[in-house]
Length: 392
Image 1 (cartoon, rainbow, N blue to C red):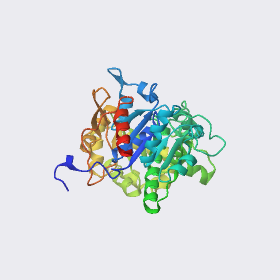
Image 2 (tube, helix red, strand yellow; image 1 turned 60 degrees about the horizontal axis):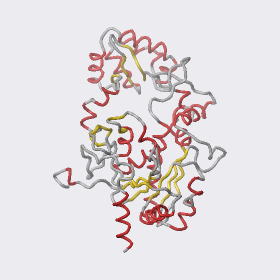
Image 3 (cartoon, rainbow, N blue to C red; image 1 turned 60 degrees about the vertical axis):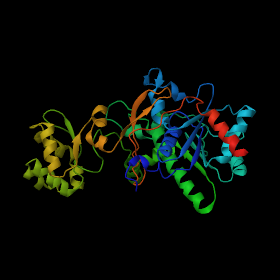
Image 4 (cartoon, rainbow, N blue to C red; image 1 turned 180 degrees about the horizontal axis):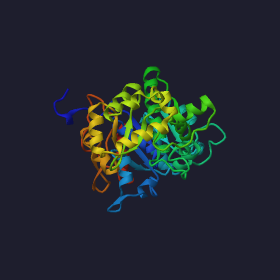
C-alpha cells in the first residue's frame, strides 16, 4: 500500500462510466456516491438551464452550494435530445458507458427513443437505472412525485413528531435520499451481475417503495398486530428505556437497549430500588410500564447537569449522548476524525465545505478535498473531442 494516501486509487468503481440524466436529488445523490467510489460521472443537462438544483439555495456569490455539494466531481455536457446533432453525441456516449441513470416519469425516455428496451437492443452491455416516484409498474406509475409527497404517502410522516402535534416532515429529504441509496445498491448489484454473466439489466427504483422499505419498525408492528402506529416523540416502540430525557440543564438521549444495560443505568443513577422493581425486570415489562419508568429516571436526572450525567454514562458503557444542533454535529471531533466534512468548489472556483464520503474502504483514497462541481456544459468540448478520437 502506498505510504502517501494521495497515491491511493480513487475507488473500487474506477473505470466504470455512468451517463447521468438525472436532476435535483434522488438520481444525483446516487451518482454522487458512485463518483465517491471512483466512477466517472458524465452529467447530461438541458443546455437551456441545466439541473433545476443549480437554482436552489443556499448560495455563495450567486452559485448554489446545494448543487455543488451533490454534484461535485462530475462532468457536465449540455445536450438537447430533440436535436439530431446532440442525439448523435448522446448515442456515442451510450456506446461507451456502463450505466445510464435517469429520474424522469416512466415513458419520458421511451418518447425520446431511449427507453430500456430500445437501448438494451442496441447496447446490450448497458445497465439502465430509472429512479422515479412510483416505479415502472402499478396504477401510480405515471404520477408526479416530490420528496414530501412520498413522505406522506409512505407513512413516515405519520410516525414522526409527538402525539397530538401537527404532522411534520422529516427534516431531510428522506424520500429522495432513500431512492438514491437504493439506486446505488441496485446499480452496483447490476454491475456485479454483468461481470459474472455478461448480461445487462434494468434497475427500477420507486421512491415510494424505498420509503416503505425504510419503515422497518412501524411496518413490522402493523403487519404483525393490525394496530396502526402513531408518533411517539423520542421514544422507541419496543425498547425501554430508549429515548430523550431531561436533566438539570438540557435534554440527553439514553439508549439502554437490554437488561444488562438497564442494570448499569440503575447503578449510575444510584437507584437500586428501580433495578429491583418487578415492573422493570425485563424489556417487555419496562415497555409496558414506560411512563412510570421514564418518570422515575427523569426525576433523578434533573438533579444534575447533562455533562456530568453523560460522563458517568460513558464511563459505564451505556449508549448515551447530547442532542446536537447541526453546528455541534459537524464540529464534533468524531466527524473530523472520520473526514466527514471535506472541501470542494463551486463551478467558478469558490471553495466550500460539504459532507464527505461515509463509505470508508481500505486501500482507497479518502482525501480532504474533492473535485469541484461542473459549470453547465463545461466538459462538452473535451467529451466531444474524446469521442472523435475514439472513433478514428
